[in-house]
Each structure stands twice: as structure tokens, then as C-alpha cells.
Length: 123
Image (cartoon, rainbow, N blue to C red; front, side):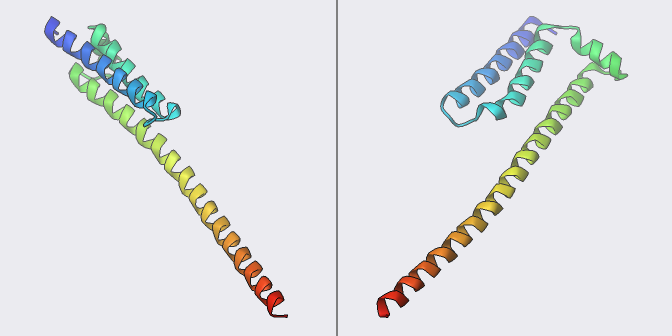
């Protein structure tokens, strides 16, 4: 890998980490959701700095063309992110259902109290 590509890869990794940090700082991304993103940026930074690491990983995985291992690593992180966000969505969906049921019960109680008040006023 030439020095220019290495520099671009390192700066790109640092830019991703900085962008994630800024999203957290501005309150647009919660800390608990940023861990996988920071992990991804860290892996990119390590692969950018350590020239032979990708070839070592490719050899361990039995991949003959080292850049193909990069796609495998990216797919792994993509699957981790998808699983993480699926869990978050499932939890939010359950909370949303519970809240809707509670609102329905509260609305019913308000209606019953209003009817009781009306009947007391007419008597």
C-alpha cells in the first residue's frame, strides 16, 4: 500500500471517529449505540496503520486475496450492526405497545370518571 493510500485511510478512519463523537456531543446519537460504530472506526484505523494485518487475517481465514478479507470483515460488522439495531427496534416496539395499552386504560378511566361526575351533577 502506498503512503498516500495509507494516509487517506488513516485520515478517513479518524474522520469517521470524529463524526461519531460529534453526533454524540450534539445529542443526535446516544452513547450506547455508538460503541459498534467506534469499534468499526477503530478496526479501520488499525488496518490502516498496520500494513500486514489484513494479509495475516486473510491467511488465517484461508482467503487468498487479502482485500476480499476486508469485505468479509466489513460484512461481519454490518451483521453486528443489523443485529444490534434489530434488538433495539424490538425493545422499542414492545415499549410502544405497552405505552399504547396504558394510554388506552387511562383514557377509559378518564371517560368513566367524567360519566360519574356527570351523573352526580344531574342527581
